[in-house]
Image 1 (cartoon, rainbow, N blue to C red):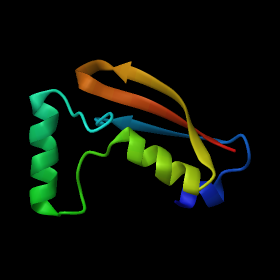
Image 2: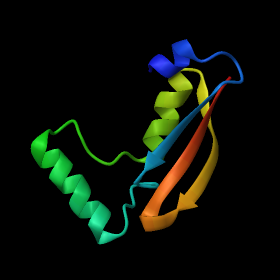
Image 3: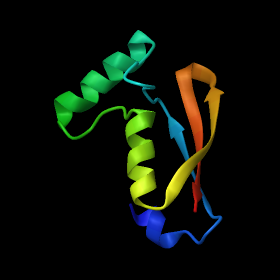
Image 4: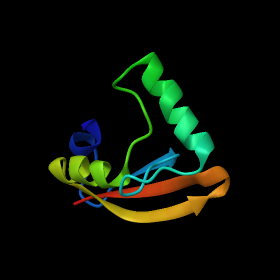
Length: 81
């Protein structure tokens, strides 16, 4: 949320890690990681990109680019509108 306030128009934010896409989280190691996080704290867990897009839009950002990375991770570029 703070990124929407801190970034100037045209600014970018980068995030990296495991993400679900449209409710699908693969491979099993990411499912296990998500379960482990949620057992520690119910508010934690692997996020779904579709949910992040909604949150981003509410804060003046949009997903500009998604790059598949090694080990089933993703590199996301968010653009401040």
